[in-house]
Length: 204
Image 1 (cartoon, one colour):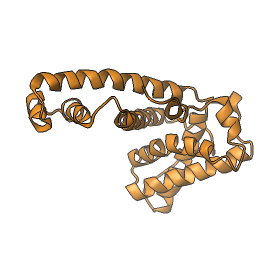
Image 2: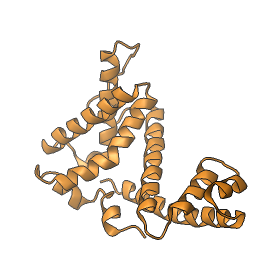
Image 3: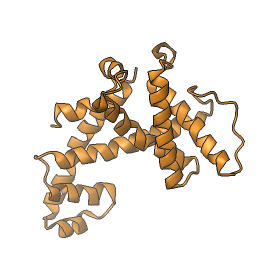
Image 4: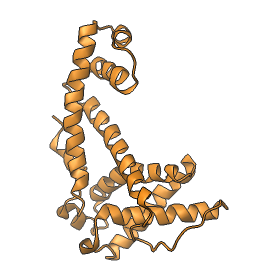
């Protein structure tokens, strides 16, 4: 089981949101950064930006979020935190695209407002789910109950589509052991992904 601290670090509870108002509370800001940075950069790449520009969008978005949040510009009664950050990310990505002299015709998107494009939220959710899977796998690697060989067999079979017999040979396992590894890690991964997804859904 993942430690309570690792799960708590993914939660946007009212207590954490209140902690963000403390400029010196680095752990609170680190929680928000680790959650949203990969999602924002993934969104920017899907909008056509290079890896370098996507990383810049993530940095600018989070910097703007910090500034705006500390100016009390986030109103919980008007929408979820993730929607607010998505609006800032979209606005920032469009600005970077314009500055790069690309053929972009942005609409009238107000800073902090949820963009109207129906596909944007879908892209955000795809990138959120991708970030959750990456984080879940990292958490499994940190768990003492899941050894490296078991994880390797799972990744080969379940994530890369390698035939079970070939994966077993690469990992020094029998075929039955490879199937057991896949089943065992799949069950635990689903549990961790569910925990992380629930934490994301707690956005105020």
